[in-house]
Length: 427
Image (cartoon, rainbow, N blue to C red; front, side):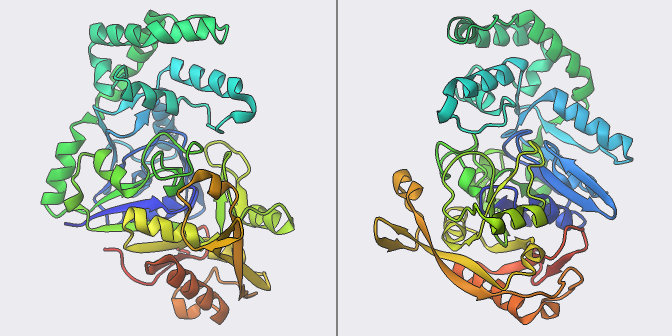
C-alpha cells in the first residue's frame, strides 16, 4: 500500500513543497488534507519559482493528480485565482479534484478573523487574517458551508442565514461593524459555483480505490507539527491537525493504509507568528539565517523568526507522528559558520529535560542547552551524493539524525528541484 504522509516537523515553512515536488514524478496523487490558504509552498522548477498557497504541490508534476481533501477549508476566490495564475504560466490544472465535503471560507469568516485579532491586542494569536480559524470554528459548531452547498441555492441561503444570525449580533454590538447581508454572501458564493463544479468529486472514494489499485498517494500537510491544534504550542497554533493523524481524517483514508510518514526538517529552525520559540536568535546570526535562507513567509510576506536546530522538537515530532523518515532541507544555508549550535535539551527552573514539556508555562520558560558542532565553508549546492558533502557537513547531518530518532533519507542542498541528495528512496 504505497501511501505516504509528508508533513512539517517544526513550526511550518520547512520546505514541504520542495519535498512533495521531488516525489511528484513518482506519485499518482498528491493530497492536501488540512489547512487553507494560510499555508504556502515555494517550488523552484528550473528557473521558474512557484508560490502555492492552497493547491497541492503535485499540481506542477505532469501525470500527477492533485487533490484538495475534505479536511481543507477553501476560499473559492483564492482557489480560482491560483488556478488562473498557473494556467497563464502554462501549467495544466485540469486534473485537480476538490472534495465536496471541504468547508468554504466565506467573506464573513475573513471579516471576523481580522476584527477579532485586532480586538485581542497584545493577546493576539498572530493569525493570517484569512478566515481559516472562523471557518473551522463554524465546521465544529455545525454551521459551516461546504463546497457541495454551492450547488443548491435554497440550502445555501438557509445555511448562510443560520451562520450569520449570531455573527451579525457580534459584529454590530461588540465590534461596532455593519451587519452582513446573507443574500449578498450567497450571491457572491453562487458566482463561483459553475467555475468550481468541474473539479468537485468524491475524493474519499477515489483515493481509497487508487490505493487499492497500487497507485502511489502522497498526503501533504500544511503548516507543521508544532502548529497542530492538539499537539502544538497552543494557543499559538493553526486551527487544524497538520500531524499524521490529520491525513486520515482530512482525506477519508484509514491509518492502516499509510505505509510511510516523512517529516520535513530545516537544518535550523524558524516560525512565523507569536508563541514560544526556545532557540530564537535576536543577533546577527539570526539576521544572517533570515537573509541567506530567504526566510519570509510565502503567504504572508512576514519575516520568519529564526533560531538554531532544536533536537527536542525533532524528537517530539518523531513521536507524535510516528515518523519513519526525515527530509532535511536548507543545509546549504549553514555554510560559512565556524561552529554551529544545536539545542539538545532545555533547562527549566534549573532542571534539564530532553523532552518537550507538556506544560505550556514550562515551555515558555525553557532555555536551550546547546552542543556545538564544527561548521564548513565549502559550497555544497553541487553535491549529488552524501559522500560529496564536506566531512563536517556529513557529521552535522549524522548527529541530527541520531538526535531526532529517525533516519534522514534526503537532504536539500539548494532551492532548485535538482539540488537534493537522496540517501534512501522514499518509495
